[in-house]
Image (tube, rainbow, N blue to C red; front, side, top):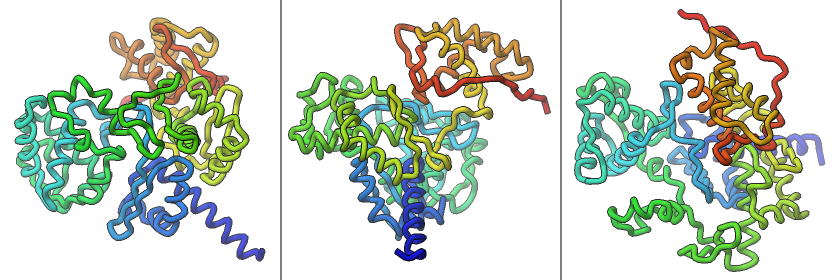
Length: 420
């Protein structure tokens, strides 16, 4: 093979790995948000579509004329560690109110190609008042307008809504603000990633609260594996049993690789017997290693689990360690305490250690220097560690997981915070 041909192969491999990692962290990619990467995805859409389908069972839809690519990432477990977040205010996660407004707003936007913020707010007011299960939406309250603005900004960041004139933030200050939008209905309709649409479940509104968990499971049930529609048969792990050996092998490959590509670390003790068997088999090991290499990850295999490291941080949506966040700094420092106590620590012990941190660095963590601040800091730090799958809650205690041993602080020097 000539040198130019070798260079072409290397370039193709690098482009594929970059596209895979970008789509993993940004499953809805628009041409406006990243023209260069979108062009790569457009040119490599056939091998990318095959790669995601074979390894993870995920569908990739690329629409060059409409300017978006959507990777429909489906998982079998509900995961609250990656909530929708406000595009400002420190990226605070959406609360229940904002999720309700997001659903109402998205539904109303489907009926119009263009709208104004005032007309849209009025439509949401009427939609909320028509459903007894929903609280009223009152644009006279600033907190409600701020929540509505957060929803609209999120839809703008997705490319589902485009500002033609005015600024969305102005509505937070005045309900009389004038903002004109163009609705990108094709992108809006691609937001749900569930294989089964909610309307197909045909459940009356009165039955939703009592059967919410079953409905959620129904939304993500995938028929390609032959899983029974009722979920009546299950193995010892509580997982629906595929109907044939071929479907079971397919499900095992996709289940293992989905976990690996969508979670910070996969511990063997959280896998089913079937998944462990696949991961230990020659075919499974070869598939995992080849997939990691093609995606540009470094694979770390340990007796306790497996994880992927992205040396370029392309697929990284949240960093740890990270000294730009008080909770993440505290999480790293509290890991030493947890690693020294394999049986785990009670929340009170961690709050005591967090209080010692605040005493040790008197000009750091000012937001937590209130009554109960140390307990709040410890709670936030534990949430960070749980999201990164470094600890688990067990019997009222916080117990370190094997991957936590990768992090060890040799010395700590926190930057002092100075008032402006």
